[in-house]
Length: 333
Image (tube, rainbow, N blue to C red; front, side):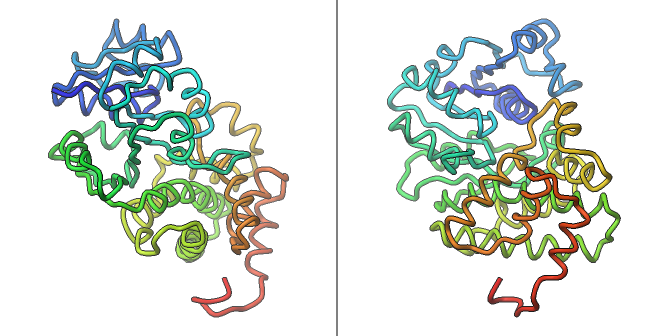
């Protein structure tokens, strides 16, 4: 039986760890918060980030990062992208040479503009895979049908093993060798989800939201292809699938940020009372900078960036988007 460590006990990390523990794998779940570890030990429940979900007895909570990182054949990093570097700085030397590292993050690091897998490869020479796709933690916890994508190199001998490891009757995993596309789809859709939330917060209607999702996908594809991804990746689960989910589902933290922005709250007000991280907030700045650096036109991403980081009013952002010069749909942005 394979040993597994999940680093990060937010809602997604907790649900993934429990899914695996229910299959009777030995699973260590590392939490930064000592109170979370204590609650899991005492109540078999992550009362802070996933209340109500009773956790398997095969799930072992710990606050010892190096112990968790060094104890397993498979290490799942389920921390926000902005924290990935700090985690690896502390734990990378403990990771066994043959361990497989799976990133479950969906963001782009500020400053370096790197995705999580790129950050991981700076610290370890281990094989790295990426898990992404439309997957609200609460629905996976409730065992509702979910399908995701595992980005992994085509020559890997671990793809099928990881598929089988995660597979349940309600959680289906497809493999895809375009790791760059899988990661970018998961990261960039969060920025578009904030825009969708703004759209709904302003009461602009379903027509506007549908147009925004469609044009947002065009922006994701343009940047993704420029950065080496395959165009057809974005029609899959980690692209269109995740985009539709986060732009229309009220369980999305990023959509919720946008909804509250559209209703008049400031970014500072919203973020001050959010317990979990909305990756799209920081990724909006990274995506905007990547677009500028790559010469890719991303008007929706730009306006989300300006609303969050430059205090532009959402209404003014919409006006600017709608007053852009007229263009062909499949050329010139």
